[in-house]
Image (cartoon, rainbow, N blue to C red; front, side, top):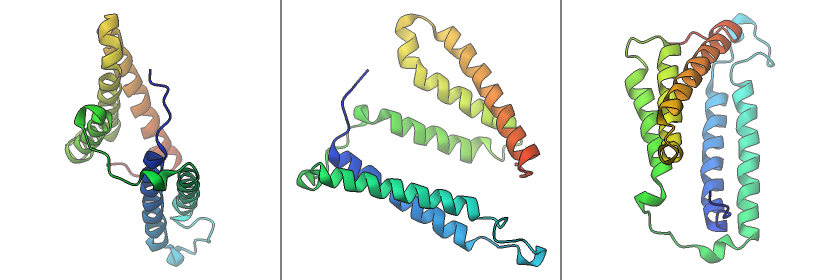
Length: 168
């Protein structure tokens, strides 16, 4: 396990990404239909919770940027070389998320099953490096499958039954 802190420059970049994401979330929440034709109050309007979450993410991004500047990030202002072996986790996560969004969703599978498959593969892939030397790959696969099924069912229940959101 690597106990090193990220560099102030990495925190600066991360803070900027979080701030940009938060701004996008806030813009999206402001542009959502307010459902005034259904006499929805301002407190039940769609976009209220995402907007508040966007504000919270923006505050955290700004704090991360401020901390990185205080720790000397501007002095390190150079773009480090991007090496795939150093960034395989983020590239793998992005690839798996794209496979889920572009491949599993809309494929005819029920949402809970698509989510379960995605979560199981995600867990297995990211535990593989630790489990292989220990010889516990089968145990890891069983854990990932069970975890995926539990999470897929929980996601379905929370969104479909509690929040009344129609899932694809």
